Image (tube, rainbow, N blue to C red):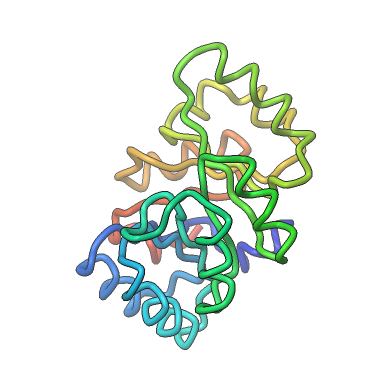
Length: 186
């Protein structure tokens, strides 16, 4: 499953047009597209793919798309996206059936969130878990290392020190919108 990382430990989380332009110039190989509209996303993905990037689209953050199967059908028919990110496992199941890699974004808020990791670990519709905020994985090392899924840490990661500490916790990669970290050599 780590094949999607293409050897990358830092994933570009692209949240704005400015971020997008910086991403095109970067050496990052994996992109989480977190902005855009129904009209702009196909072109963004086309351009990112032309730059040799693996592209995951966050279904819940694209203006004009709803959290529905028809939105996944739209992404499938109108783009060459590699994967779908969502907070909704039922949508990821459908995305997986269409051949997408799937990323379940979860927010680690309390012990109940930690308990849910065991259930997610056995869900075949989820390929990758993105835990947020990213720094929480430094506290949850045991849970990270017990999980058989690829885990990515995302959110509130802003320095090389953050990236190194998080990666030492056992996650497969970090996702960050801090463009100064996208070309970080690890």
